[in-house]
Length: 223
Length: 121
Image (cartoon, rainbow over all chains, first blue to last red; front, top):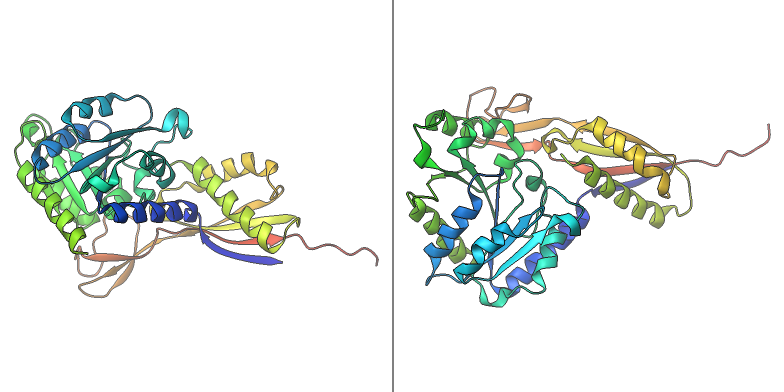
C-alpha cells in the first residue's frame, strides 16, 4: 500500500525558521545571514559594519562556529550584543547553522532593542545555503584570494543569495584573480545577483555595503 | 554535503507519516525526490540510510531516490532547458536571467508498506 507523504525533508527546519521570523518581526529586526568559505573575511566585515552603522542602527551579531568563541571575542569589545553558537558540542558539530541552532541563541538575545541582526554563519560554501534560519536576506562573501571561479563551483550558494560581497580588493594584482572573469562567472550562475566590491581591512568600498544594509532595514520597517 | 543530517530528516518525516497513517505496519521502501542543485550525493544518502534505518520503525525499508534535473526558464526568450554544466545561461539566447523550474527538491514522496500475505492456496 502506498502512503503519500509529499513533505519537504527540511519541513521541521522551516517551521522553526518561521518561529524565528515571528520573533524577529516582533522585535522589529532586519536579519542578514552572512555566509562564505572560511577565511573570506566575514568577521572583519562585521567589525567594519558595526563601526559603520554606529549611531544610525542598533546592531547585534549571532556568531556561528563549529568550536570556540574567537569571533565573538573579537566583536565583544565593540559594544553590541553578541551571541555565540557552537555546533560542537551542542549540535553534533554541524557544518552550518540551521533554524534550531539560531533559535537556541534567541532566548537571551535582546531582539527588541535591535534594528539589525547579523548572523555570521559557519564558514562553508556548501551547506549553509540549504538551511533557512528565518533571515530577511542572504549575503555571500567571496574574497579575491579565493579565485574567480567559485560561483561556478558552488551554484546553490550563489543562487540563493541576495547580495554578493567581494572582499579583499586590496589584494588585486597580488593574486591571480580577474575581476571581469569573476563578474562573468557570477552572471553565468545568477544574473540577478548584485555585487559590491570592497576591502573590509582598508575600508575601501564599505560605504556601499553600509548603504545597502540601511536600505534593507528601511525596507523592512516600511513593511 | 551532510547527507547524514538529511537522512535523519528523511527518517523523521517518513516516521511521522507512518505513525499517522499506518502505525505498526512494516515498510518496504521510502521514496524521496532529490534535486541536483542540492548537491546531495545519492550513494552517500543510501549509505547513511542503511546505517540508520534498522533502529527505526521503518526497519527493513529500502531507499528509492528520484533525481530531479535542474531545469531553467529563460525570462528573455521563454526557452526551457536542462542545466548540466556550471553555467545557468539560456541555451537558446545566451541570456543570464534564468528562473529555476526544478532542481532544489528535497522531499519525501511516499512510503510503500508491506501487504500482509494471506496464507493458504
